Amino acid sequence: MSDRSVFVFSEELLNYRFSSHHPFNQMRLKLTLDLLRKTGAIEDQHIVAPRMATDEELYLVHDPNFVNAVKLAGQGKLKGDTAEGYGLGTEDTPIFANMHEASALLVGGTLTAVDQVMNGQAEHALHLGGGLHHGFRGKASGFCIYNDSSVAIKYLQEKYNARVLYVDTDAHHGDGVQWSFYDDPDVCTLSIHETGRYLFPGTGNVNERGQGKGYGYSFNIPVDAFTEDESWLDAYRTALTEVAEFFKPDVILTQNGADAHYLDPLTHLSSTMKIYREIPKLAHEIAHKYCGGKWIAVGGGGYDIWRVVPRAWSLIWLEMIENSNSYGSLPQDWIDQWKDKAPVELPREWDDPDGLYPPIPRKPEITEKNAQTVEKALYPIRTSKKSETV
Image (cartoon, rainbow, N blue to C red; front, side):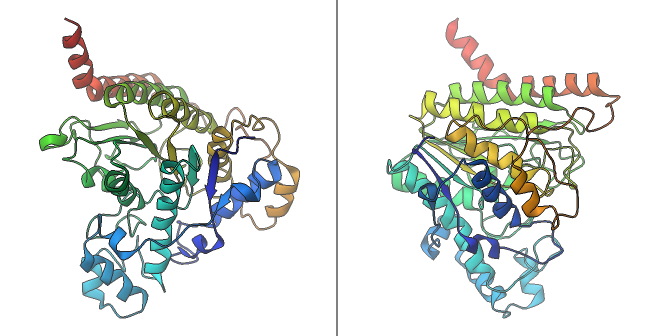
């Protein structure tokens, strides 16, 4: 087991909870950590507690008026019409007590991961409480209040003078991070997501390439609904390999939403655990090829918290520590621990069974369309590379 990786966690991360009925449920953090413990893949020495982000750190990305509004909302002191102007008190992002403190801890957890890696205390750091990629400068959105990834990238730039490659494999477009750095040539964003024709936030088109000096540093691969493993992985491998070679980052930050899975209740893709095996594997390779191993990974979406998220997120950590104990049966004691609490039958194996979903009639059409999308997204760097060899 590698001792060059850290896992950022504390029970306080579970305080980011909108309501008992809201789909964003941080219990998935606890389920994942317990699965890793019962797999024998993590020890107390690997776990680092998150810290609170300071107001000044939040201001790297967020408007001070918005931060103040979040504080007031969490104290029950923000009027309804004012709250909605900040994206608070909506169906997606309800107000809850002490929401500033809970949100600032998530941001601080990602900054803790950044410092661990950039100070040389670890090569890789995983903070599954982070990945809230829909937060904007002055507005909450899509279950996200503060945008920990955007703050972390700005922090990486200002404290460590780093060029950052941000890779987002959530089923939803990483809009908040993209727009935060849309005109910045020292941040390259790559988002592979379900097309916005059917899914929030409706952005992430191929032609969103950046603006000003940042033009050409934003890459989007919107895959079609019902995309399956092979097509999804072809897009991911091709895009990440070519974008990394084009940008040559100092550090890689990956957002690991686990909602592209067929069982996820909020999305329309048809992938299985196969993609969650490959996503961290290639990210790991890219980190060592270009970044001296510097890899920070955060969580994100993922709303089947019992059958999908614990397995998918455990595979990130197992890749970081180069542990291959992720095949065959899940630990029986993990199943026994949670089966009476779960509203669904828990999986028995690390991998999904064959026949998880019915055949997709449009598979050839979807596969061809996704290949064309990748071609369009990567066309500028491919033509640039071709012209350099002429």
